Length: 154
Image 1 (cartoon, helix red, strand yellow):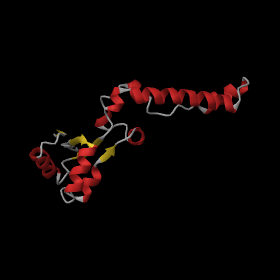
Image 2 (cartoon, helix red, strand yellow):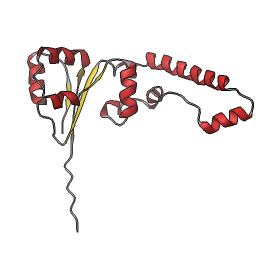
Image 3 (cartoon, helix red, strand yellow):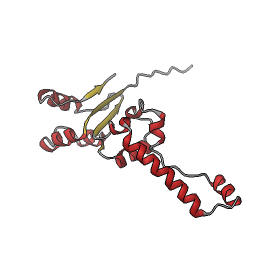
Image 4 (cartoon, rainbow, N blue to C red):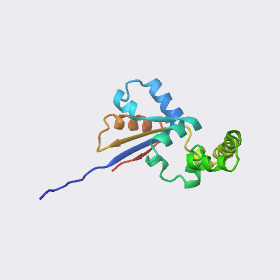
């Protein structure tokens, strides 16, 4: 017989990246190096795309609508579809042109998407199983200085 005890939880902390950087610049010892490196800074669409493609499961993206998520991926015709298109006479240039056209449209939609824009200028940190150390010091500092953040604890 095996007993499995699960008491895992996740702490999630989020604030404006610009505020986070100002606080860290003024208070370089406020967070340990380990805790500081836990934060992901998302300033630009390119930053967001990089983080999303590598970590699409982050809580940060949980409320992002599927149509918004789709526009964070590059459109690419599958190898099988390319083979079929070539069989019916389409050239590499035509196929590439179509992919570029779809990606340009996705870029326009991405730039106009409020859900995506709201994820820019974000400092996001996640800790598992209460592994964060100095976050309480950061939160006290932010509270004292009336700097907005959100914390989702266990």
